[in-house]
Amino acid sequence: MIGITILESLQEAFGLIITGDPEVFSIVARSLSISGLATLLACIWGIPLAVILGLYSFPGKKLIRSTFQALLGIPTVALGLILYLLWSRSGPFGFLGLLYSPLGIAIGQSILITPILVSFASSSLGTIDAEVKDLAKTLGATKFQTSLVILRESLWEIVLSITASFNRGFAELGVAMMIGGNIRYVTRMLTTSIALETARGDIPFSIALGIILMVIVLSITLMINYFRKE
Amino acid sequence: MNLQIKNMTKKFGSVTAIDSLSLRLEASNIIVIVGVNGSGKTTLLRLLAGLEEPDFGSIIINDSVKKINELRQLSTLVFQKTTMFNRTVFSNLEFGLKIRGYEKDTIKKKISEALDIVGLEGFENRNAKKISGGEQQRVALARAFLLEPKILLLDEPTSNLDVNSAKIIEKVLQERKKSDNIIVLSTHNLYQAKRLGDEIVHIHDGKIISQAKQKDFFSKPKNKITAKFIKGDLQF
Image (tube, rainbow over all chains, first blue to last red; front, side, top):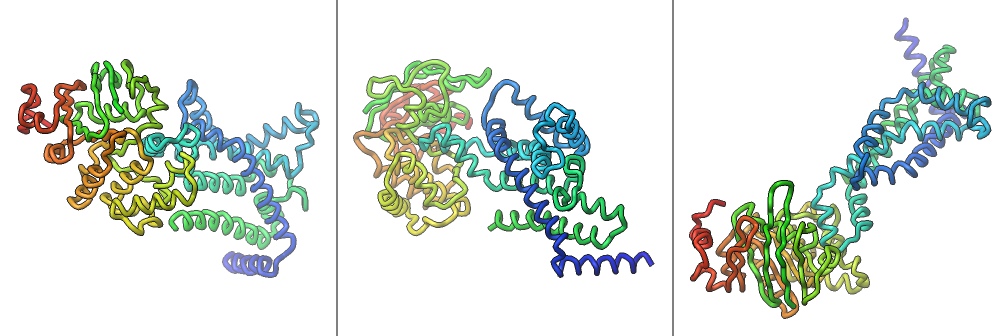
């Protein structure tokens, strides 16, 4: 009986995807753009931070690195709650109007994924052979040019760090739910919709969104790996 | 051109790699530095290349003391363990030339000539990391001499190579001897030192214990340690 229900739900889910259900696709587009913006924001401050942590020595570097590593496992709902309190009308940053807005979710997700980006990218930069640095120097490169060489040499590792960060943002629920409020046509995203529709009992809709979520996350990673090998 | 090292010391923690070393080298010569493992050959080359800062002492070129950044502009080091950027052979070769502001057409011409010299015609578009060790070392040599450095430094450049690649490298070095440059090469291989060196410098425990013209170095060793080293009685 349960098997039949799942099969029927799957059929209906594929039907929603194949027929191009407008609501399904507007949710997908919104999720992609919000998480894309979050990744872009995280890159703006995360990549320079990763370069500094990966390539230069300075007092307190170990502490900063450890802090980012500790933040890798931050519960998304905890971050969502903190941001909710900060951005709610009575909170200190309520005047920014970020609560229940797509921009608010993007900023929240960018904060969530920054530790992933910084930790992974700085580690990959740090593992580049010291001989590559020496080679660049002996060929006459300045400090800045040497840093650019190392960035280029670890380009794919950095792309993978960015991909992992995007996937984390794209698949998270806590920040999207608490900051976005799951408002239809405004802040409703893939993960928040899956949670809502499952609770409501609209299993085919949830399955359709779940399939799309998985396909996007897996295909981005597979694509990056394919081009990396090429 | 002349190069002088004055009273130079370099320590790594409690280990003294170079110990109050002084040395004078003249242009148009191939200077071969010999010594057992851990004697300080690589550290000496890295100091000359401006890749290490000495704890004491100075490097003087044509009577002017050179800072680490100036040394990097005057010298190029070919490493013992061949290192390639993860890009094409052409891109590896153009790196230093681009930094020095050469124009595209000149770069192309120079690279094509350099690849001919090291016997790697048509290798421009090959991935430098995917060619053989011998070919990589020849690319490394071409990458270095393309920049026409005043001081060309080579750290055991043929130690892991096949006979053919080693022969090509030795031939190229003989041809690169000029009146305004110095070639300094470190090696374990005394036969190679004999073949290539105009002058041989023996380094032991971070100190120069013997420096002589090639003929004299082998026929009239200046001290017991050098005599033992030539006989092969010093442990590597």
